[in-house]
Length: 83
Image (cartoon, rainbow, N blue to C red; front, side):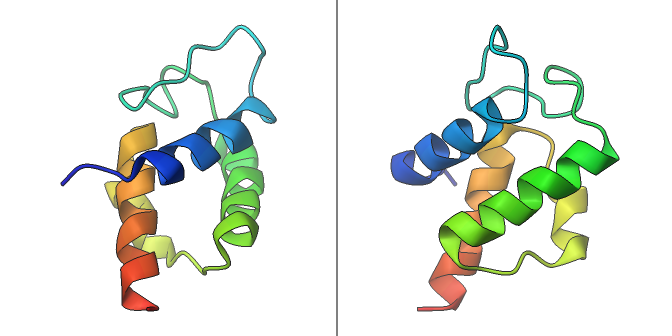
């Protein structure tokens, strides 16, 4: 499953606010390894993502999220469930 481009774009914009300006953010970017996102920063980003998409992300979903695209795919799934 591929992530929606609009979802990816929104997530990228949110991440830009929380990581260094030099960080390269693409769909395949690993959130922890490439962007050095720790647990505190992760929670800040999740709160921003939930606000941006008006959703609640279940904590068990996070274990499936490694990359930017993984996060976008999970958000797309949650958005479809709420339609």
